[in-house]
Image (cartoon, rainbow, N blue to C red; front, side, top):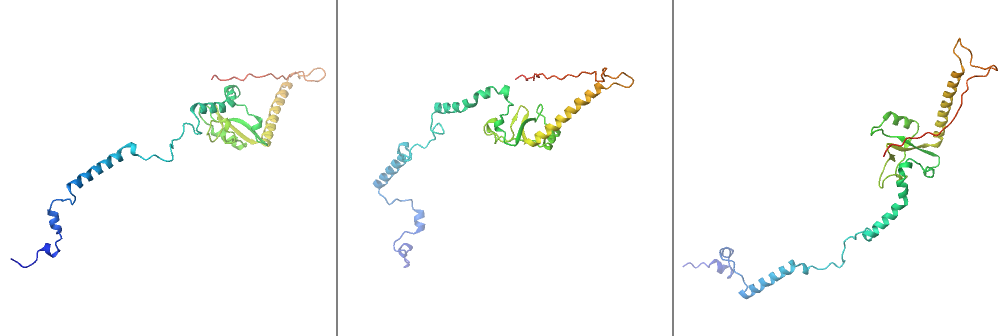
Length: 228
């Protein structure tokens, strides 16, 4: 027999790693301790899975109330109805005065007018260029929020027309030029009526006054309203 000490003896009686790998998994607890530990683990798992064991949030219920202000559905409806009631009658009469411009909303020194934007959904670039050359620019809805739906940004448009503005001084100047042209056209036609073609009698009476009588009258014009 060899006098060389065994590997277990060299390790002062400690088990070898190779021996532990070959040996079955042996618990150092007694059967009673193992049974008690298993019962405690099962009970802890059941307690953690139970909804009743969840800790209550000290902040309480954090859900958002039905109304943004903590109001009920009926209270919110009454508040909204009160907001709408202020301009409801004007909205119902919009078919008759939808293009009316309240003079009080026009800024000082400026003029407002509705201008054509589209016809059957089609724009007119040449007309838009002419408007720009004469100083017209679209009025933005941010200045008059009540004239467009809530949250709308951009131009104020109604039935193919767009609300535009330009300095009142330019508008007055353009109107004066247009009036002068209109009066000149009428004067030219009156002169043509008073003159007689060559070789015919002059259209004058015995006193040399024109025998052509031109009358002027004004009457209201019925503006057709398209069917809704």
